[in-house]
Length: 261
Image (cartoon, rainbow, N blue to C red; front, side):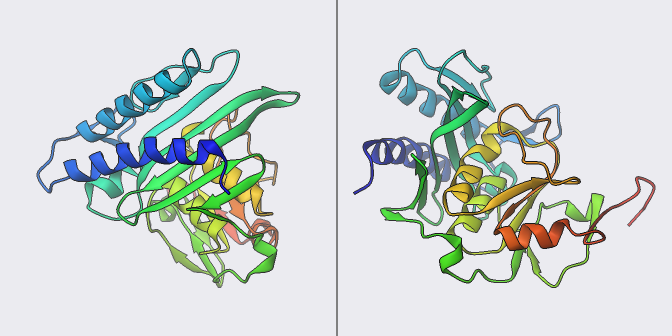
């Protein structure tokens, strides 16, 4: 039986996600933020929907979101990405959606208390709480109990800053949160996350991967990424074997800035 917050977050995320999907059109308004990433009215509307829901059910808890701002509190804080994968959303692709994570201060830093992701175009819901990952109403099995396809999810501009020497199939199907959740579901061995990510992009997905026995490691060096306090260093997340293989010398090679390819 899923825990109570499973249904609560599902209601919130599915409302925000379905409203965003209904607002999509080939001619919708799209602007660019200061970092060059796109933003739409649907992003802002979904952010407001999620904030209103959290204010009702978790009054007084801090909220830090991609579109409407905010910062970590001294206690429980909600990290909100109203549409993770806005570029995919704008292009009419499938794997994008709202994601949230409630983080709480622990002995060694911030930890994820619960988290969720909803992908409205494919009607998939992922949830994490108390060390357990869920796909819909089913507990996600451990990665060691199943054979993941030899696929690797790559950032959309991976080719601009690195080369990959691997026999894995390289794919890009959507946003960062979707890539990480799909790895937790066993759809690929690992995902590489590009530099510059924010906590709301990765908190839910990394919690899901950890729950199913996966691991994550920064590039280069192999240190564990700091979900909340990190500097957005690129990292790999997936099965322990895949992550170890990708960390081997020469497998992922950064491009020189002057390399025109």
